[in-house]
Figure 1 (tube, rainbow, N blue to C red):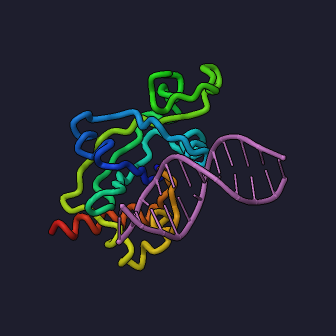
Figure 2: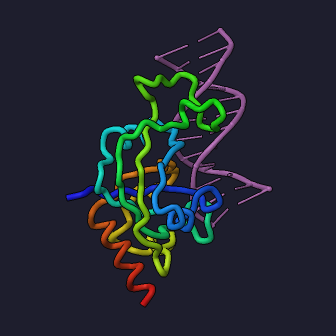
Length: 156
DNA sequence: GCCAACGTTGGC
DNA sequence: GCCAACGTTGGC
């Protein structure tokens, strides 16, 4: 059984439409240790991802992606020109990791944070936790299925 | 643009 | 190791 995750992005930074265009992308730039540990230790090829837009109108889940490579050393940590450059990172012992994610679908109707809040079955989702800032976070199987189901239902 | 929540930094 | 200051996130 593949695990389920949620990955956050701001649409003006990298949107689900960008992912559809690119087909796949390396999810670089995660610079939080808790999130890093998930990417390094937990994410695996075949896992499924809710693609979430923050600072969006509305903020919410906009589609699906899947993990096609896991535990890749994030190349931006070694690139002095990158915003995500980390001078302390070593090539033989990378600090930061990135998954390669591949486009699956764009929801016909996005599931907004408000939709999620209103749904009793989703009340414990990490993304609803006040002050939750993890840019990649675990999602329960049931939660993943439910969000998908809601999007199908909402789009008629 | 506001602001609460949280992570990181750095002086001590 | 404490903790204040600061920066960032992200809903609203």
